[in-house]
Structures are given as C-alpha cells and as structure tokens.
Amino acid sequence: MRKYCYVGRSAVNSKLAFSTYSLVEGAVKLTLPLGLDSTRGRSSIFYNSRMVLNRDISILIARSLQSEVKGGLRICDPMTGSGVRGLRYAAEVDGVDRVLLSDIEPDAAALSYYNAVSNNLDGRVDVQCMDANVFLSLHSVPGKRLHLIDLDPYGSPVPFIDSAIRAILKSGVLAMTATDMAVLCGVKPHACIRRYGGRPLRAEYSREVALRLLAGALVTSAGRQGMAAEPVFAHSTDHYIRLYARIKRSATEANRILQEMGYIHHCFRCLSRVVSRDQPKIRKCRRCGSVQTSQAGPLFLGRLTDKTLCSRLIRLQDPRSSGSGRLRRLLSLELEEADAPPTYYTVDTICERVGTRTPSPVSVVEGLRACGYTASRTHFTGGGFKTDAPVEAIINTVRESV
Image (cartoon, rainbow, N blue to C red; front, side, top):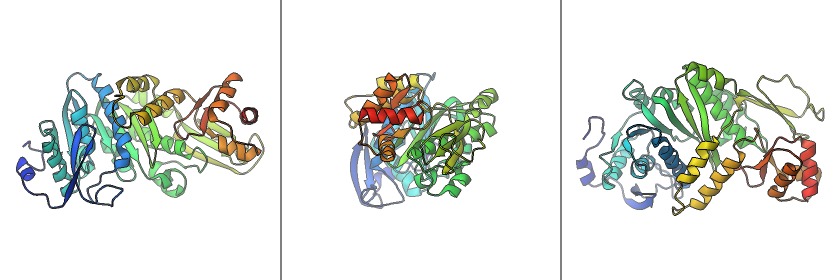
C-alpha cells in the first residue's frame, strides 16, 4: 500500500457494510451500494448514470492530452464518489502513470479502492480520504503537480478552482462540471453574482450564458494567480454544463485571455443582442428602442471549443462503444459551431414573435448562408442556430424557409 492510500487490500477481502449490485461502464466493472443510482435514490456515495456521456468525453480529452506528454499522465479526481471516473481514466487511457482519487466520505474512499482492486487497477490508482481543497493543496508544489484535474462536484466547482489551478502542471488541463443550473440560468441571479462574479440572463440562450459565466469565473481566478486558463472544449448536456481549459503559467497569456471578458446586452422585445468587451451603457434597445432589456456579464466571450482538439476527439472516438451515436453527434455539432459568434437563436422563439409556422433549423441555416452570413447549428438545442446576421435578416430567412 502506498503511503497516501486510504485503505489497503485487506479491506477488499472483508465484507462491505452495505448490500451491493454490479454494473459495467466503459472498461470498468463497478460494485455499488443498492439504492445508489440517481434513478433509484440518493446516497453519500454517489453514482450518476446520466453522466456517462460526460465521462466518455473526459476519456477522449485524456487520450488527446497523453499524446502531448512525455512519460505517463498524472490525473486527479478529488471528489471521486464511487470511483468510476478515475477508474475509467486508469483503465481506458494508455500511458497513465498514476490516477489519484480522493473523497471526504470514508465509505466512498473505501469503495473506490475496493473497485480499483476488483479491476486490477490498484497498481495505478491511489485513494485517499480527504477534503478536496486540502488534497489539491498537497499537490500544488513542483514535483507533485498533475496533468489533468477533474472537478465533478454536486453543484458548483467554484470553491475548488483556486486550489485546482495551483495543482496543475504547465499546459495541463482542468475539467469542471457545474450542475447548479438554476443559479447559472438566471433563476437565482444574486447567487450567481456571488458565486460566479457575473449576472446571468433568462433568455433562449441562457445555457450558453451559463457556460460563459463558468468560463469567466475560471479565467479571472487564474488571472489573479498570474496564470492563463484558455477554454478548449465545452458543452451543455442534460442537467449540467462541462468545461475543459488549458492552464498556462504565463501572465502575458493571462492578460490576453482576460481581454475576452465582456457583456451581452439583450432585448426581450425584438430579440436583438449586443456583445461588448466593455460594459455597455445601454438603457434602450438600439434596434427597436424598447426598455425591456437586460445585461449578462461579465463573462467569457471568446471561443469555447478549439477546432483542432475537436477534430482529434472525433478521430479518437471508438464507434463501437455504447452511446457512440450521441457522442458523435455532439462532437460534430461542436466542430460546426466552434467559430460561430456568442449566443444563439431558436426557431421556435423567432416564429412565435413573427406569427409563422416553424421551419427546420437546417433550412434556416442554409438560407442564411445563401445570403452571405455565417450560420451553423448548435449543440445547445436541436432547434437552435448561431449566426452573425442581424435580426431583420433572420426573420426574413425564417419566413422564406416556411
């Protein structure tokens, strides 16, 4: 047993203190307490079957990162729960040197080690029972830093960002999941300002605003430490948003990325929006003169997904894996919209305002392109599209598409 393992092999040979069932995810067979799955009930040891796609993408990101690293990867999952995410890293990513798992719940740490031994992964996996921030702080010094840190908390990852940034190696990747969507999508705006440092927006593209608020919180936190956090992949799926960012120890790069912070001014009457790097002093809509406006930010306005990385993830995907169709569709849409401007429109919202039938989003995108505008579908919603066209052109194209 390594000096920072929480449990030893003897614990694996003893009877667990709860009834269990087994399931397979990816290349890992898991033993889980009965009633643990989110579809069956809650437990202090959490396993969420709805996050399989999330973990599938994490594996692809780690494989991509491994090709850049000399030697083995060092990966950390400081809120491991049942251990499924960390164990999949160890089992499915070639060239992993060490996967460090930790959980503040003793039963979770014990079960994670149990699953590691059961899958013959204890040679590459170390498990500890510790608060996530304390655990990350222990790896914030040279020689102990990590290539990839995966923050997957229940709720917001913000309380763990600062310690995670310090524990990342140069050009390492920080992955974060946020599930507090009521806060990020504008239901609780004051909580969002406190937590993420920006004002949310309740509009048809609120989930993209949520992702940009999360990215903005990371960018500003890294900047305070003289480091740069550059988003390289992000997606909004089901009940959560997910962000991957490259961390660089460069104040110059930090200054460059901080210039991508800004605001979105939205008109609820005519659906126009203004994107500005500086806080706009707008009281009325520039298009229709309405005072039914709102402003989101500060948030990150730069590119959320790197096209080169997205293309690499598509090549790394195993088409034989379960759920590969959904993953392939997500990655293809991400690649299509990678260069699109911030915010998106939905066909339903446009048609409701102009009083017309609903056309296919694909036909709207094709119509906008035929008029010389940039346009793409978006992964945020099946009925959505991104474009740099003005609202008048969008309305005309929607009418013609009908």
